Length: 205
Image (cartoon, rainbow, N blue to C red; front, side, top):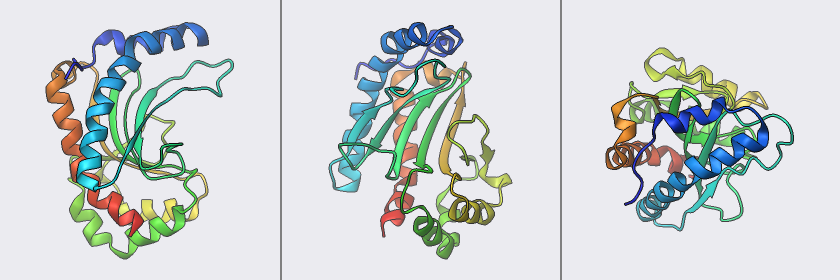
């Protein structure tokens, strides 16, 4: 595999002023890594789920003025898009890499998925390691460690609040040696996705 990890230069991309300039750096520095890493992870998820999964790389096409403060790859069962489906993500802010199983606000079946999780809350809690984190807004950096969060409360909010989201996984800070070892990071991302696959399946059950 040619993916060789993330370097400080990748994180510095988000300090570049100007939409065109930052997008040019994202295209040159980060997207080639997403393509290499994403192909491997997509093949892995296709195998473990027994269905064809598809790689999507964020285009930020709606932006006309403000440069993106993060960027990501997404893996979903739909070839045409991912935002309306449960999906897996790897992405960067300027200070961290995130690895998520993501349920974002555009998901049309959000309330039913939340109820499935609430109905099996013990299984959900047992599936997610205490060291993982949960975010309720994919546009913000903030994430709480699972051991510190009221998971049932977060799921109830996800069920009832239109804009509420649920992202479960890991955040790895810039500068962590794991990020600079491509093979080690790939294994960490694969392990995270493998751990969360039961929740992905539960969302569709």
